[in-house]
Image (cartoon, rainbow, N blue to C red; front, side):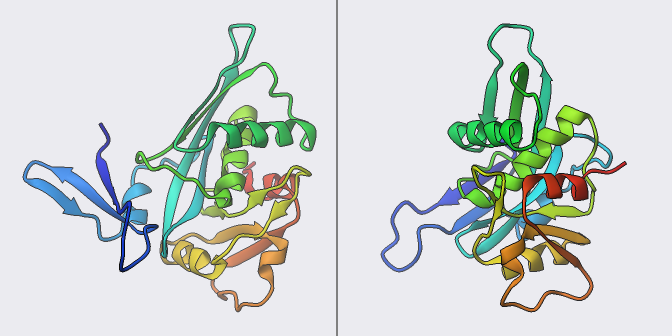
Length: 214
């Protein structure tokens, strides 16, 4: 039911099973998407709250993906937690951290998360983007349109480093993003691009302050 089709290898004797192929369904069949990140971000709208950009690694391929969040007051006694494209248990952890460490009262809010394009993201590097999207929707304030968030959220509210940070930042730079929020410890050991602002953050609150627009 999605516009794009993802081809995965469940078993591969001669290579990694983490690689994916992204195809677009057209009238005459499946057509390969040469630049998946650009296509997945093509329908973004500036100034909309609840939208964050993350960079997920699918095998050796970095993919820039939009995370959408909708936070609204619950009409029933038990608020809904609905996740499409990420692990619902991971979403529950992120919400708990935002409540405990960030001071956001989400206990009576319905929270809906969607990964645009029908992708499923299983790695923890998208945590920071999910958290920022939730806060953005809750406060009804848009995130900076040219900012990418990459990092795992720990139970203490800290932003933890992820692997292959150079490739992720390079992909964001190639697509025209101007700032990348990453874990502070991810700044060590590599040469950052001079024409892009790469900011190390220690916790979720610092990332929120940097990412939200006025």
